[in-house]
Image (cartoon, rainbow, N blue to C red; front, side, top):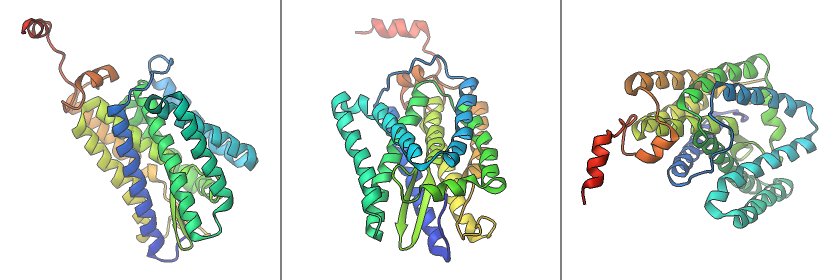
Length: 317
């Protein structure tokens, strides 16, 4: 997350952007999981190997972002956003209307990014449109993974590994800040942001994706009470704490006076410990099929219905 700072205003702007983006993405991801059934991708059972593959992409992609020329990089990002939106909207709108909506959103992002950034109002309108694009991609991708078989266990381990990754790429090899600065002012910025005066504040697509994965995987696995706890951890450790830390220390302020906080370093360990507590308290996670059967009626995996009870229920007129 990056934003210039010379007072407390940028920090509070960063807090507002991070909290709003996190809450909006989580809420829409939960709503989507409850209301929309995605076609299960033909990838078999989601397992630890898939986590390694996904993490490999996350490690390699920032390096590609640094070495690729900007134009082909923007093409790759445009195709990525298009694919995510198509996957997410097609079960809701149908194929024809999905392509119309996605085409309008993508075209508007390109046009606004190239023509409307000369004023603060223009920046704000661009950010609102770009935020809708990024939130939509995060919601669709999170549901694609969770409805496709990703479990809370996978998300918890993924977040723990990302905590170390985020710290290294922020303090040891400052790729995060470089990427944030490179995308500012261009279409398909992979972050939710807003501008007030000369200050931009952003929260990255990757952060929003892991928070959404954590909450809806908890909802699927253990019910609404577990999801509420996951949402609190996501907002506090993933948005509030990283945004407010620069008020306490200048460790997170770089030579360009940009605020760069490795949000995953705070979120990952908390998310993993919460998963371990849920596992010890409620036992095994529900599958996606069990979640669709039980819905939000239970907190913790529902016990299987005995055969005798099913027969008795079927015999009652």
